[in-house]
Length: 598
Image (tube, rainbow, N blue to C red):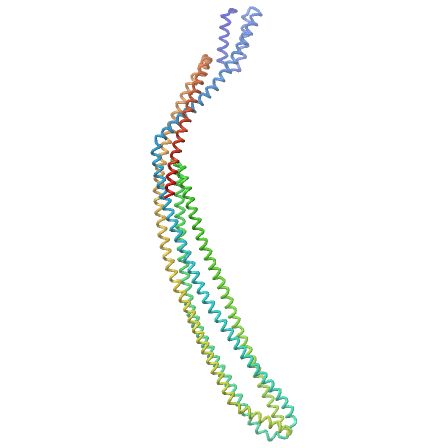
């Protein structure tokens, strides 16, 4: 057993056992081999030789294990390289198919761009029509505000005339008050003079019986004078009462007629409010249709983004959006100017209304002042009546003073003065008649002026009524116009849905093509799995590992050369595709430039 053949046999046996056994049991096997060599050996030298040989075999075994690990890593890298090669071959096939379908895709992109241009023009036309309609509405509102300003100015002039008339009436009341005050001052002077006469009459008691008859006659005349004054007062009160009743009746009739006109005006305003609500509803429907159209366009863009020509469509959409933005800015600027004019007119109407309210307050103040003047006149009349009562009381004192004979001469003078006063009775009656005529004339003038003002105000209300009727007709026309726009938007929505179905069918075709490509990829994966199974079968023969490693090194170099070659071919294909895309971009750019020029 100590021969070289036996040593080689034991060495080969140990190697096979180390290959077939797990790593954790190899040390036990080597120890058992050492024990067998100790039993079969003939000496210590052979044992040492066997130990050295075993240690060398163990080192060889470790190197072989390391080599197996390296081979496994190389196989994994080889599989990865094969996978990348398959993927690049698939990309190359896709690029070849894409180049074959290039003309068809270019034609499809041209048709899509033409359709996009047509849609853009239609949208611009629709936006222009909507802007014109909105500007027309603003112009109508402007005209209405101008008309309302004219009506407010007329009302303002009317109120100013009323205020001027109230000022004139106040001035007349003041003049009448001054006259009454002058009459009161005269009566006070007369009372003072009569008091002086009383002092003189206290000296006479002798002529009391002689003048008694004359005094009685004077009493009768004074009673008749008081009756005449009371009759004049009753006549004036009756005249004032009839005047107030007639004015109240005229005011009630005018208020009833004006109330009917205001009710009709309110009904027309409510009708216009309902029409405006209907118009706002139609505008909301039109806005919803525009939003639906925008959503359809967004969905079309998403569907078209998955097809060829995505960059061209984005550029076209960008140009369209820039143009629409510019148009929108110009329209917003014009509409903003119109809104500013409307706001200025509204502010003007607000100032006119404030001035109108101020004039009405002034008119109310003038009415209050007139009422105060009337109250003061009544107070003055009460004071005059009191003075007359005082005169009567003084006359009674005169009757008592007639008991003295010493007052005879003074009474004679007073009798003469009273005779002169009686002679002026006719003048007083004529003055009362003239005062009544003047009062009747002023009442007739005031009634005629009030009737003219009422007729003017009713005429203004009728004009406003006619204007509101015309405005309702305009609102109905605008409603019909908005309904037509809504029908047009619905038709556009149906066309967008038809186009969406077409794009979805094209997307389904592209998805089928993608599934076909995925099927190819799966076939390549199956082939790669077959290769991996073949490699696994090759791993079972560990005896030829060294030879296979050498072969793998050579195949790896060859694979690397193939990869470099395929990368060069891919770069060439990419440059060719980039050149074709640049040509297509130049053509589309030139065409878009010509369209912009047109």
